[in-house]
Image 1 (tube, rainbow, N blue to C red):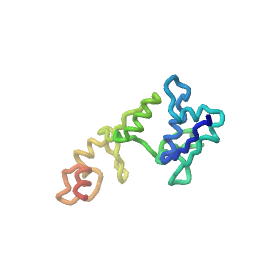
Image 2: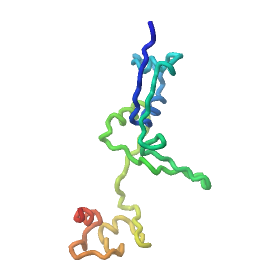
Image 3: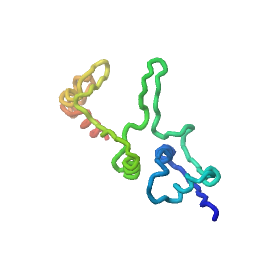
Image 4: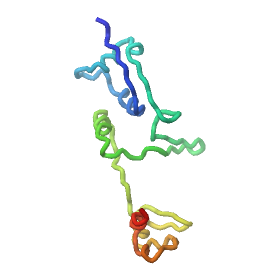
Length: 150
């Protein structure tokens, strides 16, 4: 019997790299994709088409490596919303550790016009940042002022 040939369309290439890192020989029932990957001629059996909107694969994920200092920083994706349930399930299945993303921390710094203040100070007294506020904006947090502008 001829092996099953598969065609795979990849809309999110980073997910392909995560899935490809799985242990394909794990003891469990195999789906057609797994059987295809174990076949010695899998390159002829599996046809992959990757659709990417940019000139590089990675989507929002972009790791910057400073050649002078050796520092590495993430300039792209910094969070994975809880609404991305399939991705969370995949990460769980791969045994990946995820770090909880903190959207706001009152002890971090805000720096504007060479004025550096802790966020909790900016929340209480936004005037300290040196912006000319209208009377109705005074005494409101930057978030409140932003919402008023919308």
